[in-house]
Image (cartoon, rainbow, N blue to C red; front, side, top):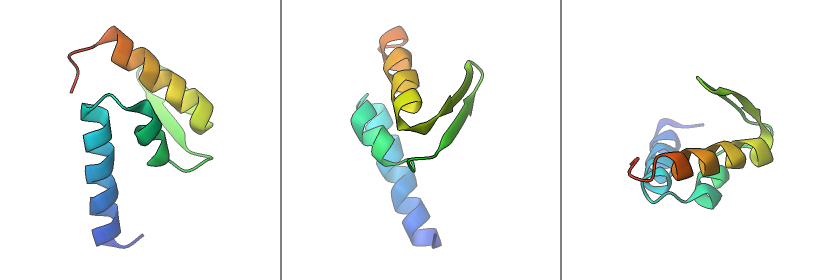
Length: 63
């Protein structure tokens, strides 16, 4: 990935996170992505989406 593309992806992910939009957050991850968090490991879109759904519900002011 070229640096300008990486920057655009970072901004897209940041904006989706701030809007609490797990569907858009998922589009910023590859199908086989692995997300490592203090809560554990999420593998693939389904588990990563579940992680963000839980996060946004637990912390509604999180942005």
